[in-house]
Image: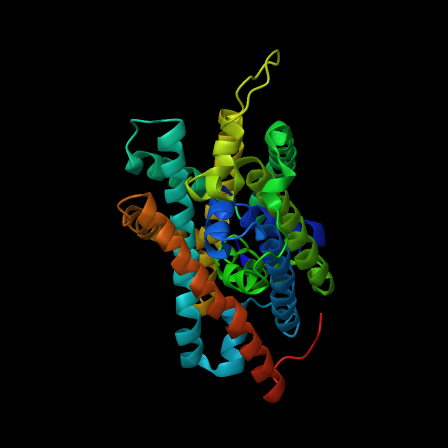
Amino acid sequence: MGRSKSRGHLSATQAAIIIVNYMLGAGILTLPRTTADAVGTPDVWIVILLSGLIVVGLGLIIVILCRRFPGKTVFEFTQLITGKWIAYILLLPMIVYFVTISAFEIRVMAEVTGMFLLERTPTWAVVMLFMWVGLYMTSGGLPVIVRVFEIILPITLVIFIIEILLGNQLFEINNLRPLLGEGFMPLIKGLKPTLLSYTGYEVMLVMTAYMKNPAKSNRSVVWGVLISMVIYLITVVMVLGSLSLDGVLTRIWPTLDLVRSFEIQGLIFERFESLLLVIWIIQIFSTSAIAHYTASIGVRDLFRLKGMRVIMYIFLPMIYLLAMIPKDVDQTLALGDMLGNASVVLFGILPLLLLVTSIIRKKGGKRA
């Protein structure tokens, strides 16, 4: 768990895997509905492409900033750029954000599990179970987290893509028409709701410091975001093409409803939603765990403390309380919208300001 043992061992591929595992969380279950609701036209898939390209640009700004301070996380080098007290003001909301993301993902996982798998299981029981399992994994440090991610990501992608594409029997290309029937304004309205689904690139504010070759961090961001964008694009096209725009707007979990709407007789599995739920629960668990770990790193580096495990244990009750604040699914999804808005400021605007300030004040500059 020590810094000297943790840093300098991540490859560019492993960093990309962390980004993808972070991104592919709860957002994909609601992405078609939230984006369709904002856009109001079948051009949702275009918004996914535009948002992905914007996020690639934001991610590149982050890695350019981090490479000016080799071996340091954002919680360390911000103090060099702005001074100690201003850094506290800027970075404490970032730590709160990561803790809240962890709580949000666990709560969504509990809602989905309670609705489709464990109908009478109390929400608090599911939340506590996954919190402790996540703590068990993250207490092993970043090497353990990466090894777990390397195992579950290929399995998740293969099973998910197969299940989504099996819905082609319901797919109607006319559900995606007309193209740009109401112009470009609906596309602009749909950009903001996709931000929560694309959160994950910001983890490079920390992970760049742990890479063997930080010069390749730009590749990690590009590949991490593009892989997630392809998954999102396939999902939105298949869900919208199969359920139609009106059908998507009336469903809370349209992605799951698509998988539940068809069956293939003669196979070992005739119904596929349970298999999808299992792998996606693991994926949401991954997002929650890495957010918890990143928040713990933030406290350690910002306040120059020792003992990561102690910090992780301290965060546990906070994550639990935050996860239990929403009273129902609607309030849970509203919390997700708030996190999407916060991500614009914390990881869209703040890194650019820090980069410009570091250049003006001639801080850092030793590109890795």
